Structures are given as structure tokens and as C-alpha cells.
Amino acid sequence: MLAAFVREHWRAYAAAGAMLSCIAGLTVWIPRQVGQVVDGLVTGGLQGPALLRQLGLLVAAGGVIYLLRAGWRLTLFKAAYRLGARLRLQLFARLALQGPAWFQAQRTGDLMALATNDIDTVEQAAGEAMLAGFDGTQTLLLVLAMMMLAIDWRLGLAALLPFPAMALAFWWISRHLHQAAQDSLARFGDLNTQVQDSLASVRTLRALGLVARSQAQFAALAGRAAEAAFRSQRWEAAYEPAVGMTLSAATAIALAVGGWLVARGEISIGQLTAFTMYLGQLIWPMFAAGWVLALLERGRAAWARLAPVLDAPLTLADTGRAALPAPAPLRAEGLGYGFPGAARPALADLDVLLPPGRTLGVVGATGAGKSTLVRLLLRQAEPDAGRLLLGGVPLPELPLAALRAHIAWVPQEPFLFSASVADNIALARPGATPAEIEAAARLAAVHEDIARLPQGYATEVGERGVTLSGGQRQRVAIARALLSDAPLLVLDDALSAVDTGTETAILGHLRELRAARPERSALVIAHRLSAVMEADEILVLKQGRVSERGTHAQLLALGGWYAAQWRYQQIEASLETE
Image (cartoon, rainbow, N blue to C red; front, side, top):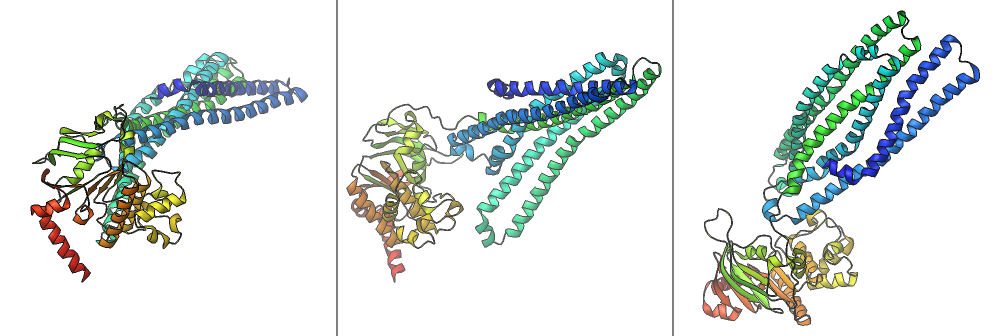
């Protein structure tokens, strides 16, 4: 992955590499120049303007090095940040294409950790690690060349004697660091999951008196995450002592051997001074080696978690290319679906036709298969038998974007974003005018409620619409669907949280809207039969099969489940009004 990214942004990496090469050249030139100045001062041949000129060159070299270091960082990190942005976009795009079956096997906290912590780690490996490795390697080779060729090869070999031991230590540390980094990232994902679950269910935790237990669970996970992070940092910190011990041993050997060579007159004091400075310059390549290995091991561990998500096969294929005709009747032919491991199918042998401009009601006991029909219509799952057609085209042959743009869906538990009421209503039509938003709210019988909010339509609803009641959230979601102008309106028990008076008002507004737009069809799923009594056809589902069908009057005359349920709900409503 990194190799492909470097090839794509080779200009940025080449520019940063060129600047680093200039820095390395100047860095190895400075000790040699200092050695010559020292020898000139010892012999007395370097004085006055000549000395100032040499010192000025050293100062100028330091200034150029500063500017080049700033330049390569700006050039490189800009490219590395592009990688982070690209990976986040790829991750989000992949998650947006996955179906519910895939998400059921994932944890939200882990996915959040991948999008933040793990991608940051990969980004560091693409930026800091790549160039630090190049810079460190280049500096090491140049310094060694100057030590061996420009000063004395015997002194250089003697100083390198401790380095094989350091290489062995680096190999041993890297093995343990990779395992520790993987564990640290996994523990961070666990902590994210706990935080997300606790915040999403804070009302339930308070109502059940489970806040203390949740805090204890969080403290335990935070402790494990901190322990794992500390273990990873401890192995990373082990690089520094290995470097320090190696350089200390090399310096001791160099001073001993160098002093002997100076005493024999084979090298000068200036050359020994330059060699000692070169040894000091080996500190950066050695520390860079440890730093690069640490970043790469962390990056490998993060990529091992990220790659399976990016490469996971889609649970729903979006390969359709057919155009959606207009008008587009909805038809189910022998439709069947069963959940894995279930004793009986959730839907079986379902045949139904919903022409444009008509309303279909679907009712039945809990678990009868009503919401399963909606899942198949939205292609959140694929049928095991039969097929669904829209405009005569099987749903898999339509692009998912075209299919979902055709449907305005209001679930029983609608999701509101942490934004204003107006923004939530205009979600499907961001360019809607305030008048259009208000008109949709009036159709959903929620305008009066919104007007009483502190800032009206500009009021922030909080995360998941926490500041609104259940009925208000449902009506805001209905207003959103009505504003979308989608040809097919799907209400999945979307009136369950409103009172009968509000339900009557909403249904009356829907009748008016239907009269104004006769081509718009509706699929209404409900437990409360009053929500479907005016539908053109009503299906009664029982254990996934159609047990009764007809209009409201026909089903009452049939005297089956629908008639019994209607009488029960009418008695219940009369008792509530007394």
C-alpha cells in the first residue's frame, strides 16, 4: 500500500528526498570543516578575515539546513495527510456500501477507532517513517564514508564493532513491539465501543440505576487500554538504551584507538576532533532506525486491522445499470425470505401489486414479517425466493442510488442527526426553502410543536433527536419523507408514537397530498388499524404468509383476524376517551 502511494506521489517524495540529500551533505561537511579550522588554529595559519570567513560558512550552512528541514517536512507531510484523507474516504465509502448483515458482525467502537487512531498510525508510517528512514540511512552512509575514507579506515572499523549487537537488539525489540502495538489498538477499540454504548444508552443506564456499573466497566477497559499502551511504549523506549549503549561503546573505542594513532602521528588532533563529531552525528541515524522501526511496526499492526474492512466483500452487490421507468408499479412475485437459523421463513409466497397512486396497507401480529418486506424493498437484504420488481425491473438490476431515491422511508424508530429541526427535515433536499420545510412540517402535524421550541426551526435537536419526544421525532421524519418528493412513500409503523388525534390529522393531510399528487403511491405498515383503513388494499400477514387481503370493509365482513383486532382497538380507544 505504501509503495503504491509513494509511486503516485513520487514528486513530493523526490523533492523531500532531494532536500534531505542536501541536508545530509551539509551535515557531513560541517565536521570536516571544523576539523580544518581546528588544525588551522593549532598551526596558527588561520587568523583574522580568513577565520571569520570559515566561521561564516559554518553559520550559513546551519541556516540552509534549517530552511531545508522546514521544506522537506512541509512537502512530505502534505502528501502523508493526503493518504490519511484518502483512507478515511475509502473506509467511509466502503462502510456506506455494506449491508446490515455485515454491520451486525461489527462493533461501532472498533469502526470509529479504525477511522481515527488506526489511520493516524498508517499516516505516520507513510510520512515520518518513510523520510526518517531515508534520511537516517543516507546520513549513516555519508558519515561512515567520511569516517573511513576521509579520516582513517582502521579507526572507523574499530568504532563499528558494537553495532552488530545493536542490530540484534533492534530485531528482538521489533518483534515484541508489533505484538504490543496490535494489542494496544485492539484495547483502544474496546474502549471506544464502551464509550459509544454508554453514551447511546445513558437514559436507560440512569433509569435502571446502572451508571455505577457502567463506570466500573469503563474504568476496567480504560485501565487495560492504558496498560496496553504503556506496554507498547515500553518496548518502543527500549530502542533508546540500545542506541545509547552502542554509541557510548563506539566512542570509548574511538577515543582509545584515536589517541593511540595521534600519539604515533598517523592522524592529527583536528582529524580526531572531526571523527568524534562524526560519531556524534551517528546518534540521529541510530535513533532514526529505532523510530522508523517503531512507526512501521505500529503501521503494520494498524493496517492489519484496517485492510480486512477495506477488502471485505460487499453483502449487497450494486451492479445494476437499468433505468427506472416512470411510472413504476411495485410488484412482488412469490417473495420469500428466511433469517439464518430460523425455524420458519419470515416471508413466504408473497404476491402483491402496488400501482402508482395507490395505497397498500400491511398489518399483522408482531413477527408476522411486515418489516422484513420493507428490508427487502430497500435491498437491506436479498430474498431467498421470488423477486421484487419496480417498473417491471427486478430490484438487483437497478442502481442502489436510483432505487433509494425512488423511496421515502420512515422507520418506526427514526434517526435524527445532531442538527437543527430544519436541517433534519431538509435532509433529502438541502436546497429546500423555509416555506417548503414549514409546509412539510404542517403536513406531518409537527409545525405547532416546532413553533413552541426555543428557536423554532433553528433549534438543535441534540444527538439522535434527544431533545424531542418519540412522537415528535416520528413526525419530523415523516416531514422529511414528504419533502423528498419520492414517488413511493413507505411508513414502517411510523405513527406508533403519536396519539389518535394526531394520527387522524396526519392521515388527513396525506389524503390531501395524494389528491394533489395522484401519481404518488404509499406502503403503510401499522399495528394500529386506523392507519390503514383508507388503503386501497390491505394485506394481513400471519407467520410470513398472507392470511387475509382486501379493503377495510371487505376484511371486516370476512370476520377474521383483522375484524377481531379492529373491534378490540375500537373498544380500547373508547376506553381511553372516557
